[in-house]
Image (cartoon, rainbow, N blue to C red; front, side):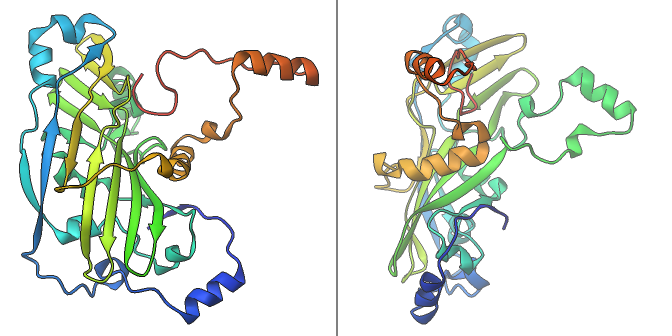
Amino acid sequence: MTLVHRSPLCAFLGFALWANPLPALGLAAGGQGQDSPAETIECKAAWGPVESSVYPTVRENAAVKREIESGPRIPVASHELDVFRALLPTDEAVLLDDEVVWEIDVERLLPFLRQLHPGVTTRMRHARPPADLAEILRRQGDDPDLWPPRSIEGGRATWLHRSDDELAILVRVHVEFELVPGELYLLPAQFEGRLVWDRRADRPKSFHLALPPRNTNFDLNYLNSVDIGYLPLMEVATDGATPAGEDAEPARARLRSSFYRFSSIDWRPLDEALARARENGRRLHVVQLFGTLDDESC
């Protein structure tokens, strides 16, 4: 496990937790989970229609619209407990830090996302060189397919809360769906997940993984055309599971800043920034956006 960020810990807190240790994490802590290999939990997938799009690619192309609204390929599937457990940290020391962010293996999340579509991949095309440049690099002996993931790729998690009875984590992952090989690609803004783990029973209480319903929240690439739009529903969840609420915003901010370092900049509205620039005698760096800056949609 790679730690992305850790805040300072006081010695007193470390001593207090050493003196009164929290329950173990089962397999996540040391491979000693007692659950049966056959024990599974059912997840249901849902994928609703496109509500709006900026360009006509989705609205006016029936084949594209049919693919992007094809619904989940596997509406219901059962997953073994270890698939959920893989999202938990493997280092017990992480339990000492409220603000730690750790990397997760997104490949372990693919069984859930394949319920939506089998073409899901962790290798995002826009994070790789275009085909013509990639070919030049290969001729020079540098294979871009072997490049390590960029900072925008992958998945990370952080704590929502911890207690003797349960753990709750917030997950953010970036993936891409190849809906039609070589032709049609869907790039969700992100998937946000909330896992609540019962520490006494050493099993999940609930799990919810979804495309946040924000307009806009996906990009679409079809041959030489593009589109950006809003999918209100794209999720995989256990029965009764709910997404993280507004109280999760500090955790969201930690994950956001781990993917996008610029998110730590003190962004201000233009009128406020102008006033401060005049007051301080400093120039402005102005960014005009079409879409959202801190996710993977346009």
